[in-house]
Length: 224
Image (cartoon, rainbow, N blue to C red; front, top):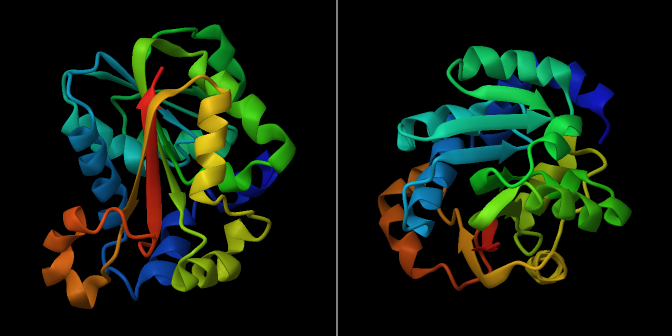
């Protein structure tokens, strides 16, 4: 999806998402915080700089600030209107357009990407991942969350979401191949988000189900 589309959705993004995800969670920020909590569990060091690539209106950036209070948090996106909203959501973070990422080489200890690649054209995904990895510090970590195309509920939500109208979901295997081509090492895959709100008491079981391709999303991570 192009920049113009995301600019148009910037101001009502949260409202649209709340309507889409109401079945799963009354507070749609649960999903943003869930990913950052998962990120914190995946890394074993205190990062100095974290990049939220494709940060949108700053939903994840907000929680990056909370979970990593001693790190400098950066967010980049193709949508200027979204970045303006992100500055309101997470005012202590540093935001810039994605086109400026090449000016910040090898400075990020952690690169976090949440549900971005299914918006990128198939022909541009490898090039985009190369751009992302080139901004990583030596020994950095990249963590990418994506929708699980094997989950029928996820596919329904994507098919009915206004800002996902041209999305092409990635199979986990495809994302792992992209990682390997970009030189990412120690690649791991986990499935996440198994239980909706009315089954939230069972969410403690998710850490035992990460190998089952049934979750609403999955996460692929590795070292650079």
